[in-house]
Image (cartoon, rainbow, N blue to C red):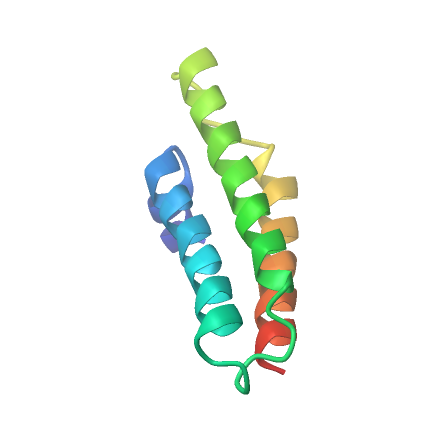
Length: 93
């Protein structure tokens, strides 16, 4: 959990990088390797979710920069983890 906190909590640029990674994976599977990924359409969903989370982190930093107890992450991170795992499973199944 400390690894996730150090990578993503309060760092919207890191989150955007992960969203771009999912989008790049979608583009690579969609246009370059048609036989590898059967359903790459799930990856833009994960990319959008991570992008929305980046916008949320940016908003939290702007509105409440002194927030050190983040209860919202208890709901956001499990949803993102399940969605990301589902998208990767669906893309490479």
